[in-house]
Length: 142
Image (tube, rainbow, N blue to C red; front, side, top):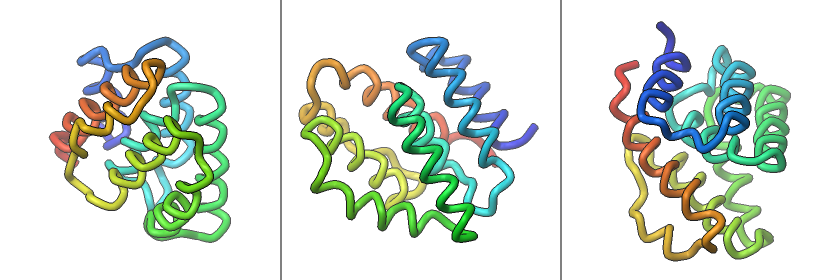
């Protein structure tokens, strides 16, 4: 079983997907990039967070297209782009973008739960699940 399948199975077994759409978009995003050289656990963490809603899933998919176009070997360009866009994000989305940047910048680690204090109520459940997903993804043996 490949890394994408292991991660998906782990997240599903822990019931971390908040809806059928969340799950479907996550699968779509992983299927799109699982054979790319930059595919890794940290990308899966970002995909989980982005797949919560349509707009973020589309943005993530566009970012994956860009990484493919530039023939990225790792996620450094994604991290740089994410950090550059932080200042222009609305308050809650800024915290989510920072969470994604933290996933990329600190591989194998899960950010502190203090990020939840920076979010509006509508975003707390996805961020909380993303933190738990991060912990579980780190435990998957690649």
